[in-house]
Length: 228
Image (tube, rainbow, N blue to C red):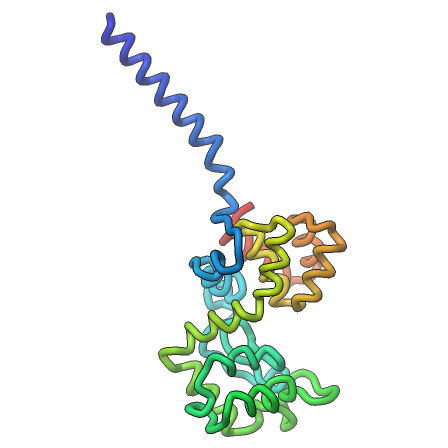
């Protein structure tokens, strides 16, 4: 009889533990939490966002792409115009372009899309210049390219990440939403949306998506990689 009582006690304990796990796990659904930009940057979450959300596992973007849009668009985060400067600051520009970092930042980032030009470079941007295009293709296929692109994207996103953290967006899903939106509409665009919806996470995401098919795909990628 005592053995039966002991078995019942153990069984009751196991059931209680299972119930505890079931109630605890949903709190983990949003993923890791972070208390600083540094903690986020040192985790593997930025790389997961880049590959699973922005690139959609390679369906949308990849690390080796170089194409003509906006005078020259490059890599996993579609670095273009001013965003190219974040790449130049981390790469050996002399090696790939035969020019200094300062020259590349000053003359071949924002100036890649001069005046009112838009769309594909038809002779007015950086992409149409053979030395730039060939240098960038060489860079994106180099061994160092992936790490530099990851670091450059993080540097671009730092103001957005820090702003999101200040407003209590501290878990992986929140920061995936913040950076996913900012990569699409810019840091200012994200800030405007967040203010409009009172920094209510899911409302900000819905407000960003609207009826836009591309944005729906981004939302779906966020939900798959970082479930609510």
